[in-house]
Length: 401
Image 1 (cartoon, rainbow, N blue to C red):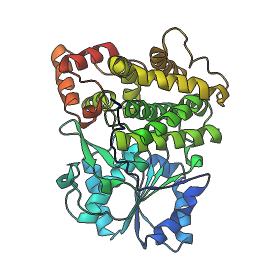
Image 2 (image 1 turned 135 degrees about the horizontal axis):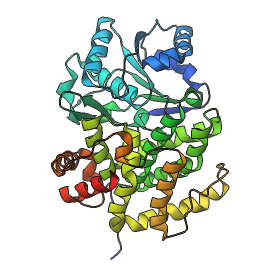
Image 3 (image 1 turned 30 degrees about the vertical axis):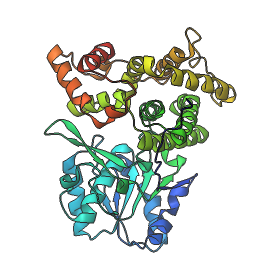
Image 4 (image 1 turned 90 degrees about the vertical axis):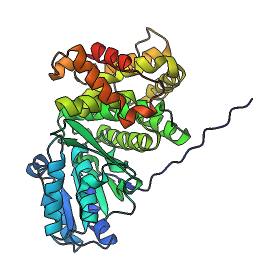
């Protein structure tokens, strides 16, 4: 019997603007939405780096009032930060939101927009599909190439009291506009370049084999993998390489579109659990768990890994990356070679390979079971191509330690 294509819905309402200096068109975009008093959400480091000056000038030239600046977003943003920003935005009668920063900033800005739009505590909208109407205009300007938050319909915020990640997800959380300006990534340090890039790779690989994958997401994943494998070492080594920065920014965006429509899996579920408990960097935690998650899924998706590896071998022949010896291992079949290529990429970019390397303490069996129980209830794991048990997750944790 002939197998028919699996039904799918692919949703991507965000307008994407890519190119050098595109960030300086933000004023015209705010004016286009009829807004006049934006809240600019960012972090203190970007303010010190001088990235806000040209943005503010662009708003001024478009006749927009001086933005209200909230620059207190921490690397692992939490619900207290969100509430503080909402209070400031309400007091200033802000009518739109601009997020300028990495994943933590953009996720914070998304949730802040919920509170600003509806005038109630954002915790009333925690969870999936709790929003019932459109939010105020939101423009996302990423300064890292990793999370894909600029084109996604979800946001993750920390609850430091409960030591867990809070999920907000809705089709109304998609940014209205994503501005991808590679010049904004030039000052990103090598460590963050590598860890955020490997976060994007995790999005691409997990959504490529997710239960709800589809033809559009497959195409996005493969192109994203090509861009990341071919350019992440270059971007990590030389932050001023605008060609590599551009490729990473587009690759991250494509992976973001894919996982938003296809889901992720077991790696993200574990990363969320460990990030909530220990405050580990999300990209680094994903990078550590990715090879082990792929090995666990191998029996269910070896054909997909085989396809991806063979595709990458062909398209990377002409890659701009001058030395690709780290990519082709040649010691196993194509599927296992892909897993080895991930390990090689992690190593080439100087990213830790073990949980103990990022100061996760040695865990008792009971503690590992507790973390596995958190991971197995994480929404990400429902899309994983192979059913996992608590025992399976504990075994992955042991191997990754």
